[in-house]
Amino acid sequence: MSLKFVDKRRLYVANLLRRTANKYNADIWKAVRDILLKPKRKRVAVNISKLNRYTSDGDVVVVPGKVVGSGYISHKITVGAYSYSLTAKQKLLEAGCEVLLIEDLVSKYPDGKGVKIII
Image 1: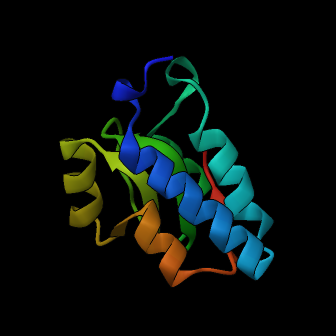
Image 2: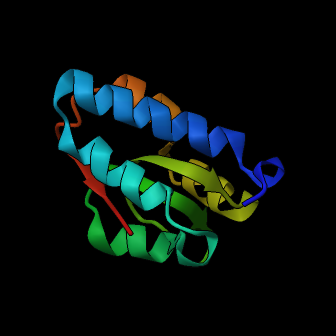
């Protein structure tokens, strides 16, 4: 494997998740790390319609992959994801949702209590 194609941000986020999981004894961050480190063909992509279906108002969710803009959301949630498509970010912000990167979500909820994983 050639290291020149390794996504350095993904490795940084994986190390941050591991350190936080060990420090706060939060198994959710270990699970997110395992999903995030999967090969490219098995990476997670979640539609906004899926977020709308499996969340309710005020939920905090983490997506260990990309959020894409298919569908709509009818309530306010806090979403932490590795990346967002432009339309997904616009739709979430228009709905009043809080849009964060995984790094920011981990620093805001280090113990992982009340955070749901959506895959």
